[in-house]
Length: 241
Image 1 (cartoon, rainbow, N blue to C red):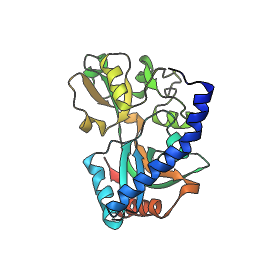
Image 2 (cartoon, helix red, strand yellow; image 1 turned 45 degrees about the vertical axis):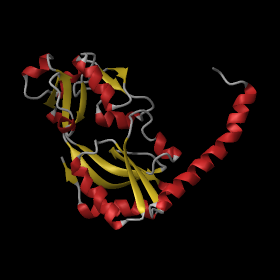
Image 3 (cartoon, rainbow, N blue to C red; image 1 turned 135 degrees about the vertical axis):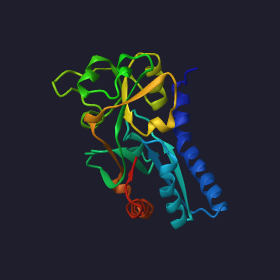
Image 4 (cartoon, rainbow, N blue to C red; image 1 turned 90 degrees about the vertical axis):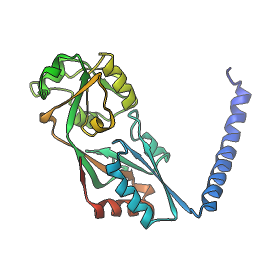
């Protein structure tokens, strides 16, 4: 069903009212629990138990704040941060966006390649970066080139193109594409603890080095809660997977 022009205008007129009512109900819900503020954190790494001490420490230091942790999608990775849908993003570096602040380093992780269990690479203990050009990989929409290249180079050391043929918005889609033999793809190594599947093998790619994840937020939206989370991460130190 499609809205008429009058219907679209009516919807647009009501949207601010709906948003205001929703926000009022949310504030009332939090106030009833003694919560006076909220901090929304979106993460690219999985929320493994290793990360929980950071969240726990923040909650102990800021009992009046509701801390929400959600997994971020790949498409337009900075879009939700810029729109105000989330307050802090845990994402790999570099982040070279003039409107965003890069905070403390949160964690570091080495790299692995996900391949189907029957893939010819499984005969080796690790995979040279050069060979990643022999099979297609995935990509996502609206990613800065420099940021995508830092995760998976567009070219091998010898200049061969590492082709991206399939779009994927999240890790589950990537795993599905790998399991069907449509792509191979690189991951942070901590996924091997999150996913243990007989139809996928995880192989180190030593030449890719490590990923460094940091807290990132909109500069103009920085507030006491964001600074409190940054202080907590600094105090507890960098996690090395």
